[in-house]
Length: 192
Length: 192
Image 1: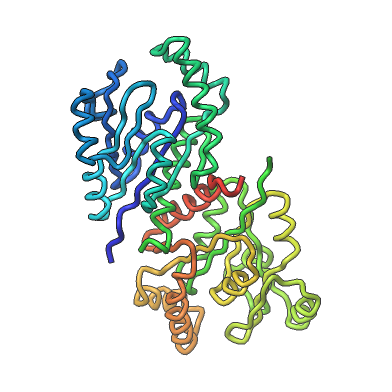
Image 2 (image 1 turned 60 degrees about the vertical axis):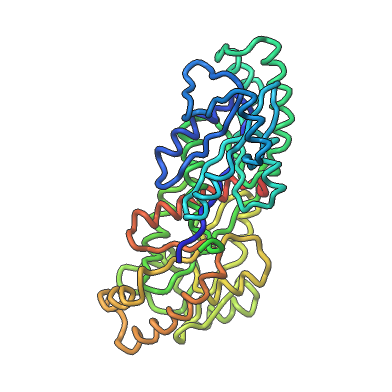
């Protein structure tokens, strides 16, 4: 009997290394597909359309939102972010596991939909280290960094609402834990 | 804050490769300690006292049983098997994770104690392959093998009562899944 796909939802404060971890995770685990979110924010250096995000204009976003095409959507730092619904539900139905990387706000909205999903939170080693990473990334202004850190504090306080929490202290160890969660969840008897 | 240890309980029909898997698992995961069961059955070739089991005489077993020294005990194929209680509870209290390999009967008794534990079932690839393994092991008589296979059927039917089920088709893959379960359970937010 084929099982339904598992939806893995990953959140982390920005600067926690979530993007790198998710990319590496999909490479190192069989049959795990990333859901790409849509956003109206401009791409950061190195970000690719269709890989990191699907970058669209605001009117296009609002049109899709009106047509109820998002599983959840949010406005963060003045920009829109949304999770396209149709593709995810199709993948899950055909038995594929889906990795969805979204912020806490979005994850909590999906939780309220009572969708069967596994929630994973990635913690930075400390807020001090998070500040350093954001400064080194140097894509944000001082004010933006400060704002991001305040959001991060609130997000970390929500980590207990997730099923799993991983500290991204060393990338390889965090990756190993993430991989373990995917494999373990696939072995759960409730699913088969 | 230090978390309490996690008790991992592994069951499998005899001949499923449980012993090899458990030995390899403890070698490949940090800070996981095996609880050694006591039994009155004679050691099989290659089995070591204090490693595979603690082999004791029947009167000694019954004395300990009377003193309530076992978390659970059972009589299987005419021999006694018991899980020493004190050591396990001490390890869990000090934050160590404990691996306990017992039969389904024993696992279900522990489940009724409402002890916080993670239950893992190891499935043979098929009953036909299990029969082959038991024949090749050639430590049992034809009648004993037949008896073991009947027990195996009943045990497999209980696998849904476990949290996880792993098919031991290829040893390395099964070991990887077991390892993943240990690591994933350690990342659960409910535990920290």
